[in-house]
Amino acid sequence: MAQSIPAKSERAELISRDPATGEQIGRAPLTMPEEVARAVGRAREAQPKWAAQSMADRGRVIMKARRIILSELEDIALLISRETGKPISEAIAMELTPTLDLMQYFARKSESLLSSRRIGIGQYALMGRSSYEIYKPLGVVGIISPWNFPWATPLDEVVMALMAGNAVVLKPSELTPLTGLKIKDVFDRAGVDTGVFQVVTGDGSTGAALVASGVDKLMFTGSVGTGKRVAEAAAKYLTPVVLELGGKDPMVVLDDANIQNAARGAVWGAFANSGQACASVERCYVHESIADQFVKEVVTETKRLHQSVGTDKTADIGSMTNEHQVRVVERHIDEALDKGATALTGGRRVPASDGAFFEPTVLINVNHDMEVMREETFGPVLPIMTFKTDDQAVRMANDSSYGLTASVWSGSIARGRRIAERIDAGTVMVNEVLYTHGIAQTPWGGLKQSGLGRTHGRAGLLEMVSTRHIHVNRFGFIPDLWWFSYTPEAGQLFRGLARRFASGSVFQTLLVLPQMLRRWFER
Ligand code: NAD
Image 1 (tube, rainbow, N blue to C red):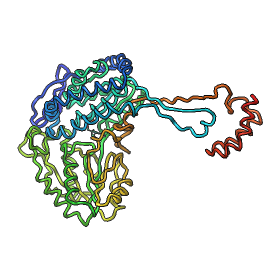
Image 2: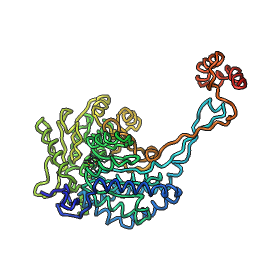
Image 3: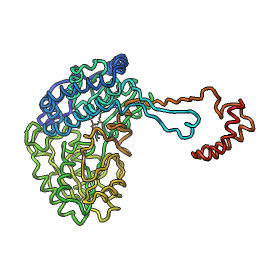
Image 4: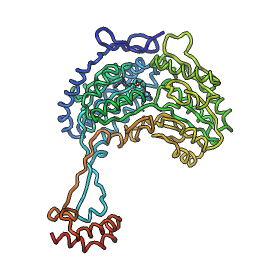
């Protein structure tokens, strides 16, 4: 059996292996805590010079990195495929293309997204006051990332952090260190100072050292359990964290949906990347009136999928990336089958294969007492339940501790949107699945146990800056009404302000204007 979990060698290295074959691809250093601290120190020294560059200059560097990636697209896709087991085409479609789009978006738009913003301050403006927000770099941003999208997930955040003027220290997953080092290679060649962007390869101990290193913000993507540990450790230093965690994303197929397209969407949403996406379709609810036809289409589409090594140009599904995750999938399926579920196709590792290949699996007769409907499976498993009413579908979709994404399928956009707005998730799609992490402009992040904070879009860029409020008083030559001294007349005025000024109405405020003028000019 191929072991895809890299081992620490005697020389404190990670060994990266192809999970489809067990073959060694390369080695990367296991960075020790003191080296992580030194990397953060170097980043802190290098950051002011990077931040002093204009946004346009920083954008040019990102665009240069983008050109390097485009010129090496095939080699990078091959590396991603070999480290993760995913098909090369999928590495291009789901990792490289969206990131190339995100790079041009933030290279061009960060300046306007982070330009200062005026804030309306209501009636305080009548007193000659104004307010605006400005956005400054945080300093050093630490990024800790998982193995399932080893290129797109960290690179997107690196681009946003750099555009905002920060230095970055990235700790990629121990299963995909070479992809992390390739990101470093691209930015080095694009001209980013070696201190401004650094990669520390290693395992959880290296990640923990980054959490304890005094970075100004942590962007963590990974499992709920590790996310909680990271948040707890970061709290000791009051380091702010963004947590992009797991999901148990529901797909709701209403009775008026296009059945064939919904079935195809379910199959791609559940089995792309071997189901190892945080936004994979992890549970499906279909209206009972169309369930037979929908399930039949799903099974037919699933049986058509070609499972092979990622370098096979016709592979739809490759191997899973992580032996540990294969065992989670087996546990969930076994428990479901024991409790009465039926596997219509799949349900086991691919026979006669040494790699981490797991057959795409469709389950019916499942219920919410089963782990496969409650816990993140993170593998190629699509459990399907039926419902009778829209309300019941919403209840079932929301019956989860997770809330990353969800989807609703309907022939009526208005009905789809109505249901979508009732589902508790960071992103809810109508007639779509899985792909919105690929949209640079829209916020990404979860509710409930799926995480805290956002990445992507303006909301994501704002996570990379410190927001400062600048307040100006143009009447700097007279004391404020509420300053000392608190005379009985002042008390009367304050009561008037509570009733009139605080109503937000200019007309009401005019009623206390004589008292206000008296206090202004008496002092
Ligand atoms: P994981 O939590 O095991 O590891 C994530 C990263 O944290 C790795 O780099 C790991 O080395 C590091 N780490 C481990 N222990 C640490 C510690 N104590 N302190 C600091 N860092 C530590 O997750 P994984 O198995 O690599 O990834 C799969 C998970 O990631 C799934 O749950 C998936 O849903 C989630 N994920 C979420 C998103 C999202 O955007 N919400 C995206 C991709 C993956």
